[in-house]
Structures are given as structure tokens and as C-alpha cells.
Image (tube, rainbow over all chains, first blue to last red; front, side, top):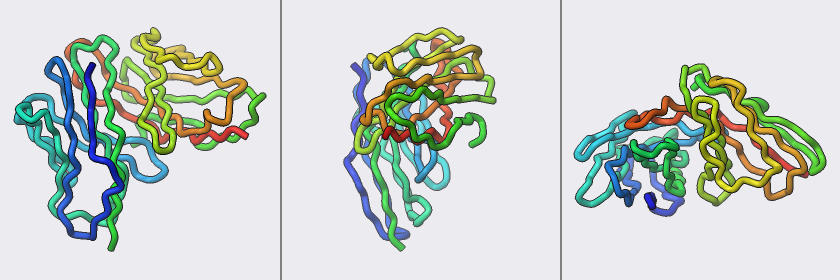
Length: 114
Length: 115
């Protein structure tokens, strides 16, 4: 079945450092890919998405490119801030799944130190 | 994000109590979901409702009972829970349909503690 694998955390960086959180997937069809973020004490929020190969999703300085050849959707940010400290989840959806489910990665905790 | 509202935000209950979690979405979506989020475990999908019909039940114990009276409201009825049921319970909604790639929108969750 479909699956999503994320790099394990926590990832600890200093402010203004470059961020990469790896995400790879397996899917039989042509999934849509998502990054969600969960700040402390809150639910998950959609950060960005991409629906087809070579699409680049971007939001709040974060970017991720849908790479079909490497089945990856790595999250990047050029200069992180303390306020980016959160848990980040990679997910995929198969548009042909009649249950409309998201397949989730385990989440990666990001800690940014001043 | 105020599109999906969950109440209460925090709930402490004994193992013999009966309580209900409530979720309401104001986004006009046709699908709603219950998730369980436990520390150091992946997000677990519990139930899916599409057009008020339950389409998924991921082997959830019967002490959890969902109810979806309309496409805007979703409840999770709890009874005789166990300590391992302590977790954050998240509700989500989406506009679902074959071929849809719409994201899910989440509430802030109910933090449940079982004494």
C-alpha cells in the first residue's frame, strides 16, 4: 500500500540556518503531496501542497518540489526562525481513493534555537 | 484557523464516565474525520464520514462511538475508556470526491486524560 517516510527528529538548528526535512513516498498511482505543520497546543495546518510531478509548493518561506523520479517531497527553508519550531508532517493522498484518506508520515519535530 | 471548531479543548474523565467530543466545521465540506494523536506515535485515523455516511472504521474499539448527524457536525462518544486512550483527539474536514486533491482542515483538538 501507499506509505510516507520522514526523517526522524528532533531536528535542532540555530536561527537563520538552512532547513531540509526529508520526505519520501511510495504510491501506486499519482498522489497529491502535502506538508502540514503543528505548533504547540494546536491542530495541524496545511503548509503547502503539490498535485503533480515537478510542481513546487511554497508558503511562508517554505518550499517543496514534487519529484516523481526520486519519489520525494523534501521540505526546505532558507533561513529558519524561532517561530518555525513545530512538528512537520508529510502526507499523500490518492485522488482515486474512495475513502479520501491521507497517508501520513510520523512527523519531524523541529527546534530552532536563538 | 477557525473553520473547524472542537470542544472541549481539555477533558479529564474517569474510566467509568461517559462523555462526548464535539466537532463543527464551517467550511461547507462533505467529509469529516476523527484522528488520535498519541505521544511518540504516528497520527492514527479512527473514523471517516463522507456525506454523513461512515466509510472507514480503522479497527477502533467499541468504547469509541462516532456520530455524524449532518455534514457540519461530528461527535465522538466515549465510555469506559482506558488509560491508554489518553491522547489528543483531532477532528478534520475536507471537500472530498473522486479525483479530489483537497487538503484536510483540522481543529485544535481535544486533549483527553483518563484517570
